[in-house]
Image 1 (spheres, rainbow, N blue to C red):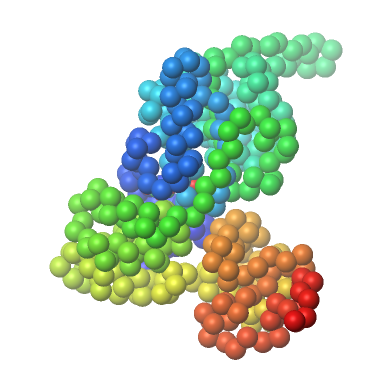
Image 2: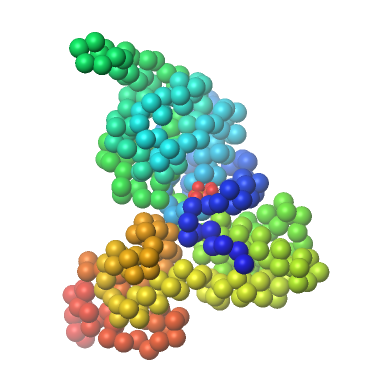
Length: 346
Ligand code: ADP
């Protein structure tokens, strides 16, 4: 059974699969048209003006293409890319080698940038603004600060939680791009392109069957495709038809609406334990024995978008759609009864 990719960070295998299936150039990127167009303009300008690309911040739920855009841009510019992440940078010294290795016009990608400690954030400000860093040598009375000039590089940050980024850090990014969930149409295209890369025979109907059940997320679409490919090889003649895709996903516990076990567990907990809410995400996370961040960054955004839950000032509330999905009658939790909003009586 495939492990669900959204529940925790990608494993090494998933990272390898992502890397193998990742578009290399902007024109190969599917969907996110507005974002891709703005980036194309920024790339053209950087080339013509012979300037480094502006610092860019990508935000959005996991698996929507933040790393993809960050790896496509240096390919477009013919420049080098260094990759690190917020949690790997525990002190300014951890960042220094990346800054000093940065070539003129090259790109430094920091994933999960909201998890970078404040001291590292402050160290990076002059690097982003003036391409220099201040290094303190020695200690106590002998301490002195030297200023090191850097090559003009571009910082690309990615975050699932732009709200956790400090104001000064956010302001230093000249472009802010928010990635949205993908349409079924775009996901079906991604699935067909990637089936081609995996040399797997897949019908158009099957691409839609998989796309509809991929939570609007390319990384999940890749995982579904991978599983359907293995399923087709083992249980059929290797060809992914709509029937094969349906059987493969049913077996993996992905329901017809595309929600997976984690989503169902969330909705079951909210409805059964908390009577449909309103309840805080911390209480839900504690009951489900999961980190709060996993729920708020990875599980909830899609449930909110698909209106299975709403986020009210008093906490999360299950909508009638969620009750319908889990097959329970809507209880007291009609949104009006909860008086969450000042809904005037008709
Ligand atoms: P994030 O960094 O936002 O977590 P990734 O960029 O790693 O997400 O995307 C995961 C995988 O999904 C990529 O390896 C790629 O195969 C696929 N993918 C993401 N966005 C796109 C896109 N716009 N077009 C085609 N494939 C995409």
